Amino acid sequence: MSYNDKSLFDRATPVLFGALFIIGLVAPFAVYPTFLMKILCFGLFACAFNLLLGFAGLLSFGHAAFLGSAGYVCGMLVRDLGVTPEVGIIGGTLAAGVLGWVFGVLAIRRSGIYFAMITLALSQMVFFFALQWKATGGEDGLQGVPRGHLFGLIDLSNNLAMYYLVFAVFCAGFFIIYRAIHSPFGQILKAIRENEPRAISLGYDVSKYKLLAFVLSAALAGLAGATKTLVFQLASLTDVHWHMSGEVVLMTLLGGLGTILGPLVGASVIVSLQSELADKVGSWVTVIMGVIFVLCVLLFRRGIVGELQALIRRSGIN
Amino acid sequence: MEIFGVPSALFGSQLLIGLINGSFYAILSLGLAIIFGLLNIINFAHGAQYMMGAFVAWIALTKFGVNYWVALLLSPILIGALGVVLERTMLRKLYKLDHLYGLLLTFGLALIFEGIFRDQYGISGQAYEVPDALKGGVNLGFMFMPIYRGWVVVAALAVCFGTWFMIEKTKLGAYLRAGTENPQIVQALGINVPLLITFTYGYGVALAAFAGVLAAPIYQVSPQMGANLIIVVFAVVVIGGMGSIMGSIVTGLGLGLIEGLTRVFYPEASAVVVFFIMVIVLLVRPAGLFGKAA
Image (cartoon, rainbow over all chains, first blue to last red; front, top):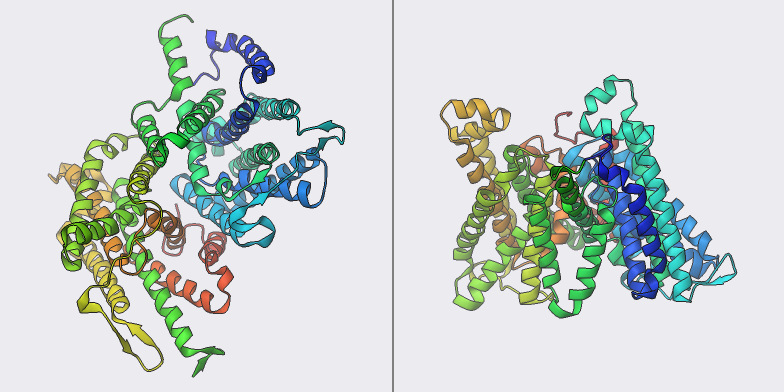
């Protein structure tokens, strides 16, 4: 991982980001916007997850709870209380942040595998809540959420307008993550990941930093979930199910753990695979996901972006 | 007759269901605890292996006419052997890495197994008939108990305590416990630790399959049957603390009973009560009820 050596890769980063930004701006004219919005929502979700696992070394197996509950909150605010979409998104994000704080306080008391299992079990509580509470629509979920008018002005039922909102949300979320990683806060997180006892002995309140990272990651996952609800006009149980928590781990792992662009690449691959394969192979989608998972863990632990970085470094262009 | 204002038959039958669920929690969390003890891996595929255990029994009966009693032996052997193959070919490569990779690998395996069975058998459940010798029921005076359900509790407890005895009281168990403490020294004493690890994983997986066969006549045999159960078992493991073999047995049974009681008094909460208890236990004792503080 390349956080302090100024390699070619790092020096090329601004150019790469600029190019990606321009691609993002023109993409809806070449590709179906709804598909792009799906990739951006899951990409942000995976980036938020990676902030926690890739940079703080905390494997949360319950991140679907934040994606899903923010989706429900946003959906209820917009559909049932009639607020504007931006208020819905902010409301969903805040709700996920608060939920993240509750999860974080409980889960950071244990580390490693226990941490993963606690987050998983807590998210299952959220799942049952969403299943049984009448306001969330149970098995049917929240349907018919209107996209509404942004700031009361811009009609989001236009797919292109919606796309640029999602793109703006993604860029904002991505920027926050980028800044967090490249700040003293991010350096401390890496120190905790590499050697927790040493970070403690240096005088850092490790629990506080872990909790902060958890809340930030949960809120950004919520931002993705709330936005996704507006795009698809639906908040459903799929988004709070633990399979979704596993899927985001897969996206991150496939793209490259602890790389800045890896999660977005991983999300693009998984979303594309799913939409390509869903109606052709049925249940084999799950099997294919499982095989990718196993191959990533056994053979390509650095993921797509991580392997590319290693390749560039090995070829000695530095 | 009433207990706390609830008819005793209802009270008794919910407690029995709780006890049966508790037996399954106990066997499954015991299997997880054994695997975790020696391999330091949370076996996420445990639910899928439980499901496959039930399916082997169902396929054996419907395709080959193999009866329940044979399946009760055959299925754990087959699925346990599959576990041995997985350990030899995949899990072995991960021991030097962060423990999280073991969890992720077994999660991937669970997806593969579930996907294959869903493709073959769909999501609707298959019925497995109760074996002839265990049909019918007995009237206990305050409630009616189907014999098969009683058998499940007895069989599960027997296997749990047998496993406990093997680990705590025999020489093989002593090697196992020493292997968890310090593999290098045990290896230096001339004991084949890699073989011990393979055996342990196979045995843990076989326990899951055994639970699956026991479950087949009670629950529907379906590809999803393990996926939902395993999350509750993880919560049981967090509550118990995985510190001791006995801890996982006692916690599993106890939580099953508490769940049953909740179903009597406040049915809506029965699906989440285990997770609530987990939160409370975490606040008071982060290492779990029987766990040693990390």
